[in-house]
Image (tube, rainbow, N blue to C red; front, top):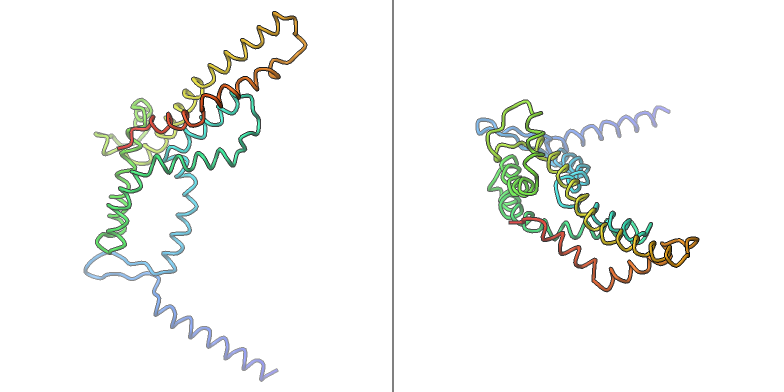
Length: 247
């Protein structure tokens, strides 16, 4: 027992010593002294990066064109009278890649102006975040209705003088509300021709005395063939892309 206790004690001391050496070789936080500023160690940077990854889904939905596109596609599927076709995963994937296509100029500007100088140590992390957020902020301001910005600006505790001074805490909810509103308006316009087809089929069946037959049996294939022959998916995707004023 004494021998085992000595061995375990030695292993514990070795672990503590190696931990102390590792902590000395990889400091968590390093102060720059008189130069000012702080450099974070690799463990802290890893934790910060993993924490930031949890906000990516929310940022994708509320700071890009993803929400509007997904709402329009979902309403289109309902207007066609389809329940699970195309599947949700297909609509999500299509919305995601259309979002990448639309946001590509913004992402390229952020990459060239902020990420590359930061990786080349020509810019601090705080400065890179400030510079990188400007293209995204300009995109969001262009797509947000002024009245939506005004609502949240009134609720904000500090006065806002110009568009450049709009904080993200005001711009993000205003942009999200504007995107949801735009998605429903586009969806309503898509609904109208399909409602006309449903009414026409229902009136024809009623005039023929076929009141016991569901109009969906005839209107659904008719809507599908019209939408397919008109290349509706491509036209809708192109219209959604053109609806954004990307600089």
